[in-house]
Amino acid sequence: MKDVMVSSGPMYINGKYHLFYQYNPGSVIPGNKTWAHSVSTGLINWLRVEPALDRTEPYDAKGCWSGSVTILADGRPAILYTGADGVKNQAQCIAFPSNDSDPYLREWTKLDSNPVIRPDGPGLNQSQFRDPTTGWTGPDGEWRIAVGAELNGYSAALLYKSQDFVHWSRVDHPLYSSNSSSMWECPDFFWALPGNSSGLDLSAEVPNGAKHVLKVSLDSCDKYMIGVYDLEHDRFVPDTVVDDRRLWQRIDYGNYYASKSFFDAKKGRRIIWGWANESDSSSDDVAKGWAGIQAIPRRIWLDSYGKQLMQWPVEEVESLRRNGISHQGIELKKGDLFQIQGTDTLQANVEIEFEPRTLDKAGPFDPSWLLDTENHCREADATAPGGLGPFGLVVLASENLEEHTAVHFRVYKSQHKHMILMCSDLRRSSLRPGLYMPAYGGFFEFDLEKERKISLRTLIDRSAVESFGGSGRVCIMARVYPVALVNDRGGSYVCI
Image (cartoon, rainbow, N blue to C red; front, side, top):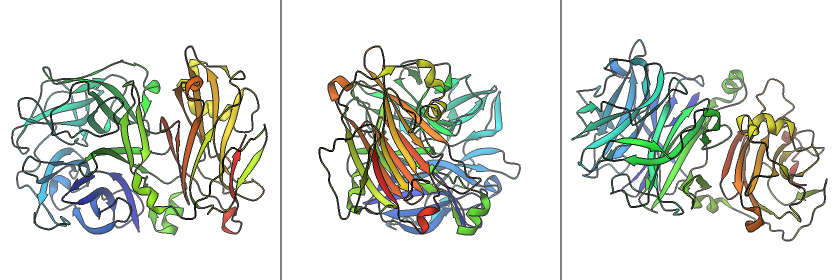
C-alpha cells in the first residue's frame, strides 16, 4: 500500500527527466516520508527506480520531507531536503548521487555534515522550518535558497547563501515575509519574461525585463506573487502588496497543492508539477491500496502584461491521443445539450471554444465575489439561469445525468474588460455518501470584445478532471468518484 505525496525535486539532466516525490511505502496514510524516484525520457511513461532517500539518520528519523534538486555549476545534481528528527524538529540536509555515471542516478549519499541548515536564530519555530527551494546564483557568484518558515509568528521565505552549496549562512532578512499567515510551505522562486512562453534557467543571468515569481503553499492551495528581485538588497519586491490573502492569485483553484517547477533544458521551458490528494475516505484508500496522484505536468509562463501566470499541459500529452473526433460550428440555444459521441467517457481530452452571439446579457461584476469564488460557484451553478452563462462541459455523466461533473463559465462586465467565472462543480459528481464534493471556481479578466472566443480544455482520467480555461488563465484540478459509470458508460456533453 502506498501514499504518494508532494513532488519534491523534478529535474532534467543527461537526457532524462527525474521526479522525486514524498512517498510512504508501507501505508496509504500520510507518514514515514521517504523520497521515491521515477525516471522518464518523455514525461508520459515512467520507470520507478529505488527510493532516493529513506529515514536512516537521527536528523530524518521522522521523515525525509519536501525539498528540491539543484544542478550545480559542474553539472552534478544536489538534493536539498528537510529532515525531521525524533520530535519533528526540522532542518535542511543534502545528498549527492553515489555514482555520477549511473544514467538513472539510483543511489544517493547523504552528507556526513548533515544537517547543513538548522533553525538557529531568534523568532524561529523549529517545527515550522522546511521545504528549501531550488538554488540560484546572485551577481556575487554565491548560491542562494529560500526556506519556508514561521518567523516571530508570521510566514517567511528565509534567505540563505553559500559559496559551495554545502556551508550555508542565513541572510539577516527574509527574501520576503508577510503577516497574513503563520507559515508558508513549499516555496518556489523563479523568473520569467512577460509574453515569452520559454522558461528561464535559474543558473543564468537574469535578462532585462524579467519578472520574478514567488509561489507559496497555504490554505490548502498554491498562491503566488509577481514582482522583481532587488539584487542589491537580496529581496523580493511584489508589484502589488495585497494584505488579504484570499485575493492572492492561485496556481490552481481546485485540488492542487505543494507544486514544484523546474527548468527543462531539453525544450527551453519551465514545467510545474502539483499533487492532488484523495477526496474520499481513508478506508477507501486502504481498499484500493494507494492514495494521491501527480497532476499532469504543465508548461508555465507569464502573460504578455506580466500580471498573471499561464499554464497548459505539456505537449507530450498529445502522444496519448487516439481516435480523434472534431465538430465545428455547432449552434446551441439556452438549455441545449450536445452529446460528444465516440469518445471514452473515463479517459478523454476535450477542447472547446465558445463564441457568445452577443455580450449584452453579461451582468455587472461584483468585486466581493473574489473573496469566496467557491461560494459564488455554488450560487451561480450550472442550473441557475440568467445573465451570460452558464455554458460549458458536462463530463463523467451517467445516462440520466443523475451523476455528472460540470465545468462551466459565466461572463460579467467589469470596468474595462470582462470578468469570466470558471467553475468545476463536483456536487453531483457521485451518488456515494461521505465524499468531499465542492464547487471550485476562479475568475480571470478577459478582453472578450477583442478575443470573441473563450477556450476550455479538460483532461479526464477516471477520478481526475483537470481543466484549463481561457487558454490557461484559470486551472482547476478535481478528484471525482462516480459510481453509476461502473455499469453505465454515460458520456460527455457541451451545455448551454
